[in-house]
Amino acid sequence: MSVLVVGSIAIDSVKTPMEERHDLLGGSASYAALGASFFSPVRLVGIVGSDFPQAEFEFWKSRKIDAEGVQRANGKTFRWSGEYAWDLNTRETRSIALNVFEHFRPQLPQTYRQTDFVLLANIAPALQAHVLDQMERPRFIVADTMDLWIETARADLDALLQRIDLLILNDSEAREITRETSLIKAGRRIRKMGPNYVAIKKGEHGALLFGEGDQFFSCGAYPLEDIRDPTGAGDTFAGGMAGYLAGTVKNVQFNDLRKAMIYGSVLASFCVEAFSLERLRNLSMQEITERYETFKKMSQFEAPI
Ligand code: AMP
Image (cartoon, rainbow, N blue to C red; front, side, top):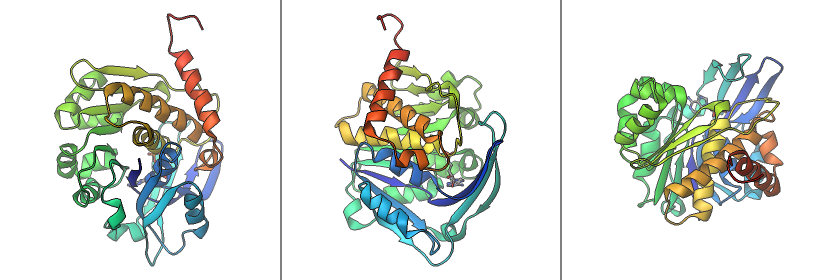
């Protein structure tokens, strides 16, 4: 089954303490779509400007990523620039140029409206809702968000939470949205705000998953020695989760989400090994499976290894 992915498509500049790179493909939807495409066909919704490389459209085609829903507008593509501190976790946005993104109204092609699985990657919650308005009863809706929307579009975000099945956010965002210091309390509290499931990412410390009642799952992160560029890890995690669910699961249960979270973590761990989408572009299914198996071994504490 396909997954519809909507979000930003960007040209990024990234500075880490070791290296600086310009004019890289980025954006929440670019990472999420490629992450999801390892498991299921993708229907991509976004906007690019006239400066956007045609080669990316060819690449998407080669990866079963349908780009009919990507609008091409006159003007420049959305640009974002960020700089990481030594911990490669703390990030500062150096500049943002919305460009064609400023007047973006996602418009779904007729053929997209009946997609069962939806990933609302990080964009303004009002735009995420506008996508849902055009859809016919999707079966499972995943949404990602960021601190900016918690701070500037809280009412839209609260309304969106009523309409989704799984919210993915990072630890600081979970604390900010709930004003709780405990992530366990925060996860449970967010469930009461609407979504049946909540995934909280903790960067290099793994992720937590909350479901009904006492349903709870915690996984570590893959122990990577070298991180080149953390950009897009969260979007790739969300893409991996949503793609796995769309590609392999009919009726999503908590156990499926546990597995999906591991696949999301595996893909995110590959993402950060290189700048932009470079590592994901040449990643094989075999490499994904091998790292998934390593995750399995890492988390066993009773069975012999
Ligand atoms: P992440 O590292 O997962 O937080 O995502 C990084 C990506 O988000 C970059 O490639 C940016 O182009 C994109 N991005 C940054 N700010 C925004 C924003 N306000 N809305 C949508 N996408 C954004």
